[in-house]
Structures are given as C-alpha cells and as structure tokens.
Length: 91
Image (cartoon, rainbow, N blue to C red; front, side, top):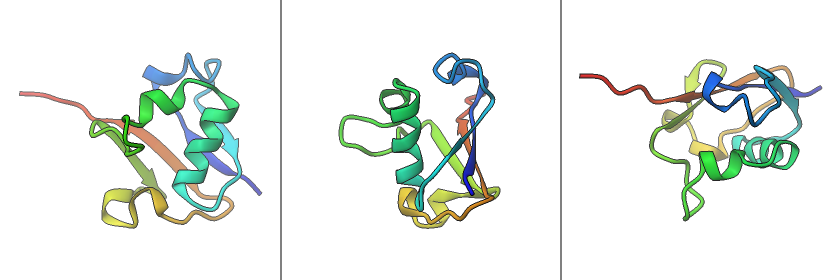
C-alpha cells in the first residue's frame, strides 16, 4: 500500500492540480524525493541548497510535526497520511 501525500494549494500546479498523491517510501525523505521524481519542481520548492527542508515548509506525519520526531528521516508506513503545510506569517 502507498502513503498519501497531501499537497498545499500553493504547490498544486506542480502536481497537475492534485490535492493528494499516492507514493511509496519508508521515510519522509524518500517520499519527498519520490514526489519530486513523479512531479518535478517539488524538490526546489521544498529543499534549500544544502538539502534541508526550507524553514517555511512544515511536514506532518499522521498529524505529528516531523520537527518533533526524526525530521525528514521520520519513518512512514502504508496507509499513513503525510501533509506538506507552508508556514503562515502574521502580525
């Protein structure tokens, strides 16, 4: 079984308008690489020049922020939902 990756509205042009895509992988890093392979352009929008997630990109696995888990090395299992959520600034 695949893992569902939820795509934010701002990035849906890269996924052909899809709000969700199904991908295979065992970690968030593998999923995001698979996302970029299937839909080129995600990598440059999600990662900085050092290969780290951009600071305004939040990723959640089963509603848990990966910053409080194992970062992009957080494990995922079939049937889980991974959400990409851009940071929102306000003031």
